[in-house]
Length: 119
Image 1 (cartoon, rainbow, N blue to C red):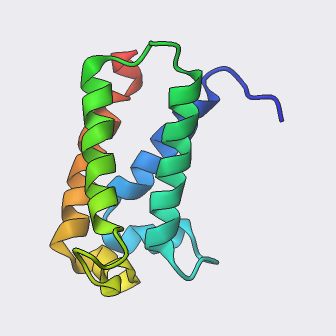
Image 2: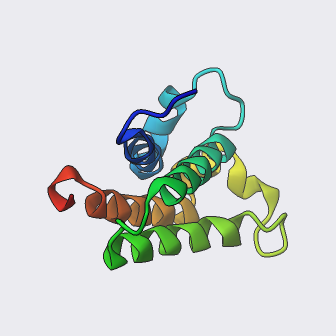
């Protein structure tokens, strides 16, 4: 598949919007998925990888820092229950957990760094 110019950034913005959405709105994004939390994190991870591989040094320090903060939070949350139990990855937790509220805050801040006004 040939990648269109700007496609990785568009996909990253879409993934960030998904993570930044209010928990109850996230289920609408993935109606056929049983595990929306995992899908949100996976989409973000894949889009970050694509942006980094196509970046060629164009990401700003604030953009890199915002991505890193969000990645750290999701990584900490996904350490196979070492720090959090599996209930953190349920639909209910996405809507009500303070950890997911922090993910939404970090995603919104990261999305702001990747807004078209910053390009």
